[in-house]
Structure formats: structure tokens, C-alpha cells
Length: 117
Image 1 (cartoon, rainbow, N blue to C red):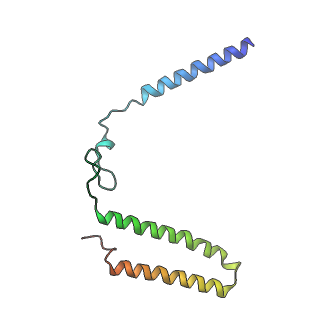
Image 2 (image 1 turned 90 degrees about the vertical axis):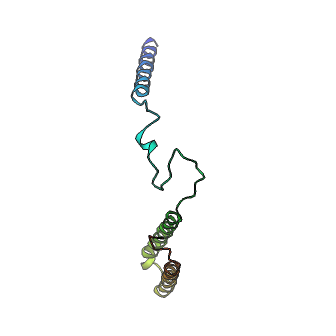
Image 3 (image 1 turned 180 degrees about the vertical axis):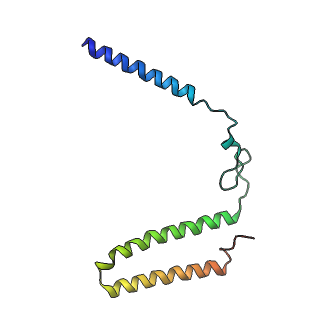
């Protein structure tokens, strides 16, 4: 019983030492270089949060999300190629690809793919 109490006390002391070391090592300044620089979206972290942001950044984000979801929807179609009827698979795949191309054409007509204003 005494040995278990000694081991528990030793573990507690070692844990406290590591916690104190981590507090000493991880002291951060409030004027950190990363905190003073703008985020990836162009916001200045020290300014007002209600400043309007670039619409191009928003459009690029939406287009990225759309293409990301497209990949997530195309991959199961490739995997299911051998397990389903080829005619049904071809019709569904063609419809999906045509819808993607129509969306891309619409984005192109609306000048959403242009990087400049």
C-alpha cells in the first residue's frame, strides 16, 4: 500500500513539473508576428470585423466548394462502374457531366472565372 502511495505521489510530482515547464515554455507575446499579419482572406486582424471583403475571394471559395463536391460525387460513380447496368450508369453519368458543364458555362458567361475586376 505504501509503495502504491509513493508511486502515485511520484507521478503527481512529475506531472506537476511537466505542466509548469509547459507553461514556462509556451509563454506567448500578444504582439506575435502571425497575429499582426492579415489572414489568408485579406482581413487585418486588428481592424473592425465589419469591413467588406473582396467578392472575388467569396466567388473563388464557392467555386472551390462546388468542384470539391463534384469530385466527391464522381468517385462513387467510378467505383460502381462494374456493379450496375452499363446503360443506366452511362445515362446517369452523362446527365451529371452535362449538368456540370452547364454550370461551368454559366459561371464563364457571368465572368465568375475572371481573376480581375
